[in-house]
Image (cartoon, rainbow, N blue to C red; front, side, top):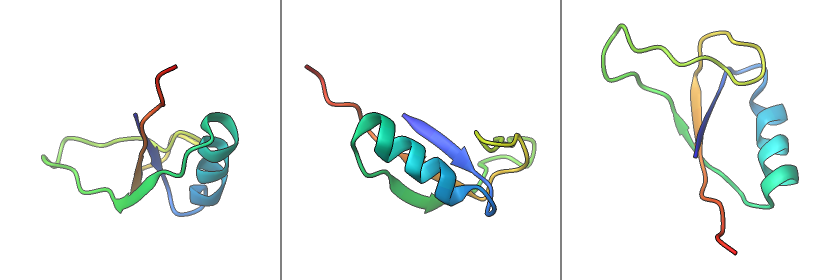
Amino acid sequence: MIWYACEEHLDYIMDDIIDTYMVAPILESYQPIRPSEKKACKWCGQSSEYQLTFELESS
């Protein structure tokens, strides 16, 4: 899974992932492939500066 975060809400989103899924995400700067490709922060909907990637463990 990939979640996106702005600078202001990065800590909240990391906490949500860790608390909900019990995994530590991989944090990377978000770089859109095309200028028209914009991802929104999961928390507030503003432009993202980071992407947090994580995998859910299968049961």
